[in-house]
Image (cartoon, rainbow, N blue to C red; front, top):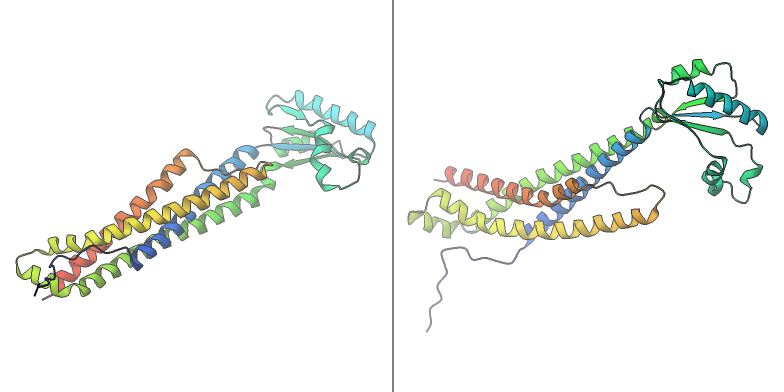
Amino acid sequence: MRRVFTPLVPQPRRPGTFALLIAATCLLMLLAAALTLALRGAAQKVAEATDGRMLVQVVDADPIRRDTIADEVMARLDRMPVLGPAHRVPPEEVQRLIAPYIGSVSAIDLPLPAMIELKKGDRAVLVRRFRDLPAVQISDTGAELGPLVRLIEALRGVALGIAFVAAAATTLIAMLAARTALARQAGTLGILHALGATDQQLSRLVTGKIARDASAGAAAGLAIALLVILTIARRLSAVGAGVEPYLTVGAWITLLLLPLLLVGLAILAAQGALLLTLRRAP
């Protein structure tokens, strides 16, 4: 009769629940990190586009008087060198901007305001300068988009918090997996310990299996996250109208490095939990 010997060293097994949990936390972390990085880029774009920009509107129903006042505004702006360059928006461009929102009404029949854009300006100075022109309205583009920037920053904070929660969950999962493996292999590890194996050697023995499962789970999470991110980016690019995914090359490198950091965190947490448990053992 052939004897069957049970090996003392734990044999590799197929990735199980631990790998699936790591895949889920890795997916959650990558999506949250991608959202954080994308919102950061979007906030920077909005801030750069609206920093100090002013919009001067001449609101008058009479087209002749409106053009006369607009010419006067442009003349005064040219005599104010401390301000940035001024650009009068052509009426055709104004009509094209509002065309999607007025349905079948012809934009030509509407008393549209004359619009002048300034790349840099001081609203208080402009208000004093055009106080004698009641048809002139001045708005600070950056101030009007302030609530949008604050909303983006709030969403960034939430996404960053989710990423940290995923990292903390990975640490706890790895510690629980290490203790479970230690309890399951207690007899085998006890024999190895009696044969002279040190706590460091036993912890590396168990941590090797955890490292393989964590790597498999992180790879699966990375693959799914990239698929989701690229799909969303392609959909956003197809929308157009200035809606673009703001993920730079540095952001992509960060996303690719995060799974490695997650695996390293899981290994360190598992090894720490194992060493602590082994040292407390009699």
